Length: 265
Image (cartoon, rainbow, N blue to C red; front, top):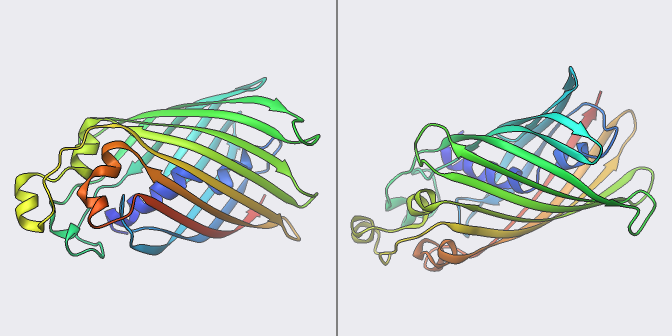
């Protein structure tokens, strides 16, 4: 899979993480889920492509391991209403395997693995129904290869509620951001890039990258099988939104959708 495809996949699953969100509900079994998703071609693109995705959850020695697209997390602390651990995932760059021929004239950017920690706090239960929950989560990670030499962070507010014995609803609000080096690499257009592509020169600085909202619906099937649908949208902010890569060739709004089939163990 190309780096641009990995970026789209990482962006989708970092924001949604459908089976992961469902696994956070108490007493969830181990599982494996596979599916297909639609996601932007690259950050700020208005071109879309279909991609496979997968997720899983295994508990061993009191540690919960979760596969989240091109990444993995390990929750080694889970007491009362607090869960914490470490994670690693792939942050993609931009290569020549994109549909937009103009953006393709800009310099290629390699992807990089990032690693960091996360914490998740259950804020309340029984808000609108006896078994609903409201949780707040945050994670921060760093580029571990030096490709960008930057920090990446996100935070989310999640509400989950069972609609019936076999149907689970989760709504998620998120905010994410990165530092100057990553924003400059992916959203700036230098003089050489401007001459090659015809896009206006632009210097991007880091900060809040996007706000997003995602809605999941998980429907249990017979014999420990379930099907999950997801739909969501995010809006770029600040210099990420003002980059000519977005304003002249892409879209500040990104949409995504997917469906997956899961097996519980």
